[in-house]
Length: 257
Image (cartoon, rainbow, N blue to C red; front, side, top):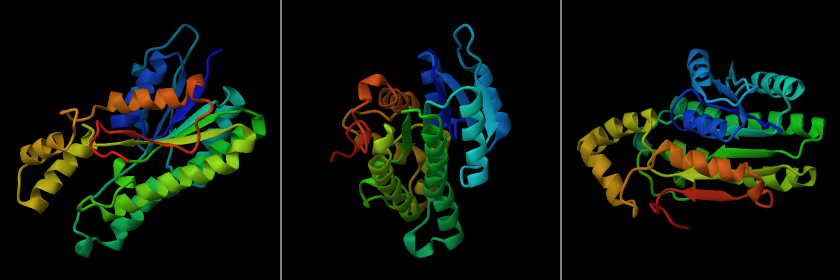
């Protein structure tokens, strides 16, 4: 029987890789993003088994109304088996110069978005009696504060890990597992922007920052979105049905805990 998953922030980067990996493993995927055109393009390009039709939807993850509408619609029409809260943003600035407006934006998407979407998904699963799975995208920056120029991002990702544990504890009685993945230095459009920002802040070059990231990673390469996607696929699989409340490090050894 085909299972259905909703993925947020899946119009590019890690989210797109998660969508593609799960589609390859016979999931029916609902690609969501605040950029509806990007979500539609990703959904159209996904591999599909016979009878499986991938879909897309516009979703502002910080809107409870948007999240509830998507979760209930998917539950009623397709059955909601899993939800991946992946949408995220980042800005780089020194702590002393960080504007509160940027902090608010970061928290709205990275933390409030996980809360809002997780609540909507869990309510839909409980209503339908589905013992589903939720996976949140955190970061190795959610396990250590030693990350320059990203104080608001660090705070948001620490929050995601704590929220994941709280959700797992309360939703366990409904048979719903909740875990998060903690990527490291991932080659995505978001990281490309960060390379430029960090180079300016450090008085270096993007290539210099990239080389530093590789030196910090024992496996000696930058992480690919597919590395994260395969870990998400595991946490959504039957092999992980007795794992909940975990923050899985997927970073090539760049941070070990």
